Structures are given as structure tokens and as C-alpha cells.
Length: 199
Image (cartoon, rainbow, N blue to C red; front, side, top):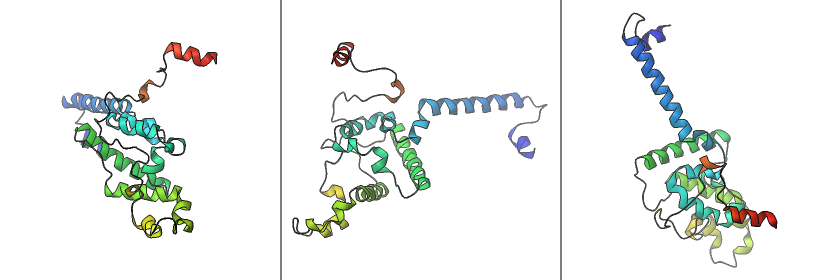
């Protein structure tokens, strides 16, 4: 009851109506922004959630044309997998950082991972490719491979995996990606869809 008195003015005060109205407006705006920002989509492992931020379109498209598309989504590489709490904590922390940078239009032309993200991606590379990292048959094939595969970042050699050679956000002109909010609408032209159905 004391909390209610601290938040809302006394019933007889003319400010009570204003306070209730402002609380309703702030709550409504918050819910509207959460819906428009597709906040719930970020809880999934669907790569389309990443395209909610338009600057991620080149990254999404380069991943779509990579061999990793068949085996790994964004979260398989970019969030920790040691436990579910750490996964969603990291996802929320990293997502809020990215959202604030993108909202303020402060994103760099070429995006690089922060140190914390590099550690997560490196651990996930090893998690999926542990057999290649631990195989001794490569020792005779590549000189000092054993040392290199444990002490260097995987992408120091595998630079084009999985996002290709194009890393700038404005290097791909008129880049198009599916819009997650328009999942009902098809992007296939009618004539092509008819040909596909006829086969």
C-alpha cells in the first residue's frame, strides 16, 4: 500500500489523473515498441531475427550462400552453449549493445567482433570441429599445425568462413533480405511459382 502512495498522488489530487494517464502512455509505448522491434523473435534460433536490424542484411546474405547455412545458424556460432542461462544472458547483453549502436547509427562500415564475442565464436568453432582440431594426422601435413590450431583464432586462416570476402555494410549495393515481419508474403514471382508447381 505504501508503494502505491509513493507512485500515485493522493486520490483528491488533480495530478492523479495525469499520473495514471502518463503511466498508461509509457506502458503502451513500451509494448508497441516491443512488438515493432520483434522482441520475441530474438528468443528463437531463427536467423531471420538477425535481419530485424537492416545493417545485418549483408551478413545474413553471405551466411545464406555459405556451406554453414546447412549446419549452423547465427546462434550456433555467436552465443555460448555451456548452459541455457549463459546463452540467453550473453544474447541479451550482446543484443542490447548492438541495438543501441544500430539505433544511434554508430555502426562501423566494417564490423568486427569484440573480444568477448571472439572467445565465444572460437569456442563454438572448436565445439563443432573438435575432430579436425585434435586429429594428429594434420601434424605432418602442415608444419606446426598442432600449435596453430590451439593458440590462434580459427578465422586467422579461415577468413572467409562463413561470411565470405565482403565485410562492409555498404559494399553490396541494393542488398535485399527477407523481412521477418512479412513471412506470409511470398517473394517468388507468379510465373516462376507456376513453373515450379508444373514440374
